[in-house]
Image (cartoon, rainbow, N blue to C red; front, side):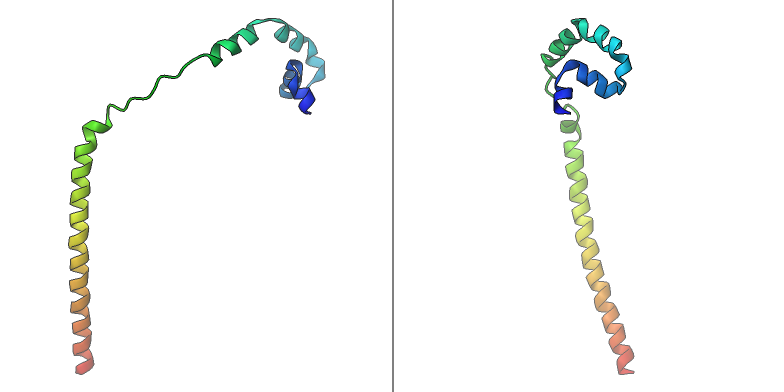
Length: 96
């Protein structure tokens, strides 16, 4: 199979799957344009991505993260306080 896929006509037959369409392969592969197009597209350079949006929203995101961490700390302290209060109430029930 590697030998078949190594040739140009082999790719066509692999994709089409019918040997009866060999005249289509002859027409397609005899024209030089498909090879020229391949060489042209391999030389295309993709421009480097420049992020212009993140710097605008970075301070806002950082501020929200600070608020989130403060809220988390308050929540943990409140949870500890409530757990202590629940433990005290359960101790009172046991004593009575």
